[in-house]
Length: 398
Image (tube, rainbow, N blue to C red):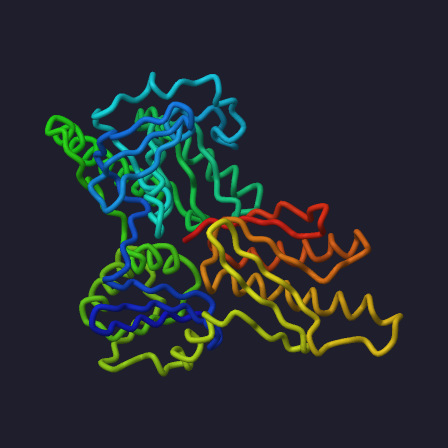
C-alpha cells in the first residue's frame, strides 16, 4: 500500500511517499530552498564567450545564468537533441548580441559557485503530457513499455494535433497518460497551449521594457510531486495543513481519483512510520546491508561515487568466493536503486562493485539494476561497465 504524508511546520514542508511503511521518496519544500528549475524568464544577454560557444544571461536572480550554443540552436534530432551535433559549425554571435532580451527556461538550478543552466528550448509540463515549443515530434515515456499502448498514445496525440490544426509543437506523453482517453489527453494539451500563449504574450511585453524578469514560475516541489504521484496507485494521503488539504481535495476531484483516502490531522506527523528517524538516515554516508556488507555514498560536484564493500560477510572457503561476491553485489544493487531514488541523486553516478571476473555476472548485475530502477519515476540510463570495472549511469533530478 502506498501512502503520502505531508507535514507542514512553520516555514518547512516535507512530503514523503511510503510503501508498506517504508520511506521510498521524500522532498523538502522549505522557504529557504530557491528552486528555479522549470521557471521561464525574460533574460538579458550580458556576456558572450565565443571561444566557449556560450553566454551569461541576467535573469534577475543572484547569479547570471549560463547558456550554451547547443541550447540555442534548434534540435537536430528527436532522440539525441544536439548532443551529437558538430557545434564547431555554429557561431554563437549569429544568435546572440550583448544586451538583447531572450526567452529562456531554467534546466538546472544554480549551485554554490555556478549560476543556473538555461535553454531557449521551452517545455511545459502538464498532468499527462509535456508540451515542447517549436518542435515537431511526438514521443512516449520510456516507462510505458507496452508497444500497443505506445502506438495508441502516439496515434491519439497525432490525431489531436491534426484535428485542432495545432502546429509547431512537440509532445511527450507522460507515464500518467497510459490508459487515458482521447478527451483527457486533448484537454491537457489545450490547457498547456493556453498556458504557452500567456507566457509568450507576457514575454512580448517585457521584451520592450528591456529588463530581466520572471515570466512563469514552475510548480513548487510539493505540487510537482503530487501532480505526478496522485495519478498512480496511491491509497491514502495524510496532511496536517488545512490549506494543503483543501487544495489536494479539489485536485483529487478534478482528476477523478475518488478512491484516494484523504485525511486531515491537526498534529505533527513526523512520528508516523518513524518518518523523522527514516529522514535522518538519508544523510548517512554508510548503509549496511543485511548480509553484512555495506555501501558508501559520496557526492562531489562532478558526480556521485558509490562503493560496494563485503564488510563482515566473507565466504569460508576459496570456492565460495564468487558466490559471496555476487551475493553482496546483488544486495547492494537493490539498495543502491532504493537510495538513488530516496536521496534524489542526479547527474553522473559511478558504482564501484566488488570485482567480478565473469562477464555474465556483470550482465546479471546490470539487469538487476535495470529492473529495480523501473520503480523510479525519474529517467535513468545505465551506460555499462568501464575498463576499470566501474559501472556508469545517469539519472535526471526530479
